[in-house]
Image (cartoon, rainbow, N blue to C red):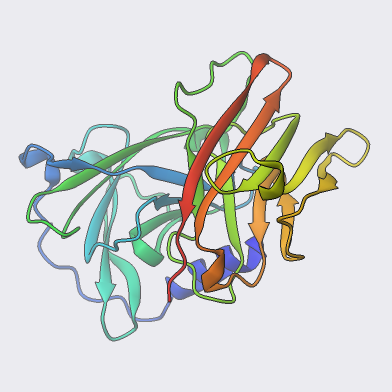
Length: 269
């Protein structure tokens, strides 16, 4: 499940023998960014002392990336530079910076792993990279939130996130609303709308078990769908035929209107 995903990502990034440091890669702050990239968080909300992953919500994988603590891409804020190692077949740390605490690592797709998450880890993180289909730099900023208040306003346009971004057939895939960690209930549908024949399930938060439970399975439930924390949809042993649009309708006791969003699920062939 989720633990196995994170363990595999962190294990892959800890191979022995780091390459010798290369000259500091030209920082994207030297150029006007031509494209911004969204950074998402997995799991949907943190557990103190556990691991959190900030990953690029994009199927493309950069050959190299720089991660910074804060919004400013300065040398003093640099955590690490990750680079794809063609011998090992995954990204590894090429060089650490002044903001490296020893708990950060680079993972698949140039994602940033933070181990043993603490209060002090909250706040913005910036990634800059080259090589996502163009010659110009690409940047992204993510605010790592480690405490949730129901009084914080929801994002204007809620966004569904997919993890992992490029799942292989047979893996587990997670779909969830970014930045909304504790809805009271949710309904998941196959397709771009909320037709009853497309319903996968309806789930509610159980105060007795402190977890989400499926309240009603729908016509589109194929026996491999489960609910997880943050009312996430988990598809076990994903198949190529699972690709396509999915819709969530989510209830929140602090919001009168349900929040809805849809996303196209990608599956690598």
